[in-house]
Image (cartoon, rainbow, N blue to C red; front, side, top):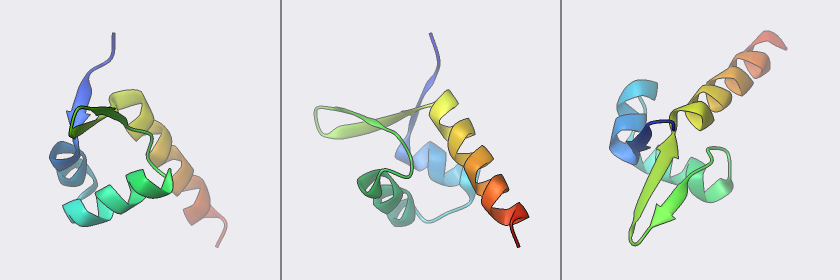
Amino acid sequence: MSKLLSLREVSEVLKLNINTVRRYVREGRIQAAKFGRVYRVREEALEEFIKKQEKIGRRR
């Protein structure tokens, strides 16, 4: 079973503002599961998001 990260932890890993991470979750750019009032992101989902960002960066 993979580790679940809080949005705060995701924001620290990505060095983004937590509100940006929340927006990415709302937009579906980062896959997250909601447990009650709290979102959690699987490590694999975060890695997938990072890979997609790397591909976008290479297009330039």
